[in-house]
Image (cartoon, rainbow, N blue to C red; front, top):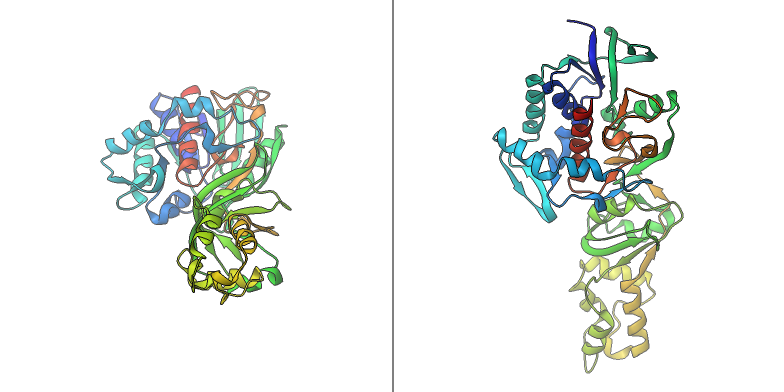
Length: 398
């Protein structure tokens, strides 16, 4: 096989395969390179093995970036409906779940097979497993010194993802390439990740591990903050579940998170309405809202006797209790790190990239797509949609 190509794509994940397939089907000679033994492991494990491959409501508002308008062009150019058309053309059965999330009926392998087949239709050449050891740029394009020999390409696409889940081979390769060619990088950090707390501070709540409930969760008071109505899960070390994973992308060290434990209710009004002549204990009332053990622990930590009767508490005390239920504040000490994170926040600064082609403005022929760049989606299929959209935008522009 020839060692000279029009395009070399490093990273055979969601964005990389999408880009390679589009470019190949346009008639370009494309080589797809990946260091892993197994193809697209992050696709394979996603969605509990059924791949939450997009979200039907995906739009720019569902993404974080220091350059928030950057993602608009790619997302408009390739929508969830477009990807769904591709899925249907391969006869992959799918279903919609919670809040627009689309999943395969069977296995995520169907999405991997689809992308591999699309690459096949474009005549994409594969180098896998293959380690890229050095990248140099010359007059004719790029030279890649790899574990399988020298490759040359007029254009180079970096689709190596972020640092989340290093046990599956995730690295900072894309960021190192960006820095090599003088591009700025927005400081990376784990995102869509559980939040942790000081062990002593969390000890009273550790016994609640496994307890879950729907909450209204927020952090930050300005436009950089986030707010979500989702399920919260208590763990031995801290908090997880969809609510926490969502808010973790917005959370900054030292910031408190505010938790409304009774969303869309007025607890002051409800407690005061129940009070007259009531023999009910507070614990009993709150156990109708939350798991019983949470009601017991939360009241104890709030300094209120679980056995206290509503009728015996002053109205002022009930109003204060209600305020705390709606505004429970905690300050995490950190996150569970890249080993538990679903994606990376930050990455190649998109202010140095062209939004239509994903090409580095200062380095002709060098493109960055997918999670490697500073565009991070919400939980629920949004990051896959960015992979598809950025991959297609780049593939069309090559």
